[in-house]
Length: 97
Image (cartoon, rainbow, N blue to C red):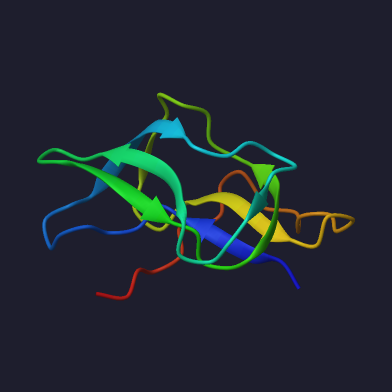
C-alpha cells in the first residue's frame, strides 16, 4: 500500500513551505528515514525524511512550489504500484505536532 509524503509542519507558526529540491526522483528507491527532499520555511531550510521504504512512485509538487502544510507532495510504494488519485482541491492532511 502506498505511503503519502506530506509537507510537514516544522514549527507551531508554520503555515506553508516551499519545495527547495528533491533528492530523489520518481522511480527512485528510497529507504525510510533517508533524506527525501529539502523545504524552505519562513525561518529555516530543512531536510524531510522519507516516511516509508519502497519506490518514489509519484512526485506531486515541483521544486519551487509553495504549498500549505499537510499537502500531499508525493507517494512511496511498490515499483509497479500506481499512486492513489488525489483531487486538486482536496483538503490538506492535518499534521500531527
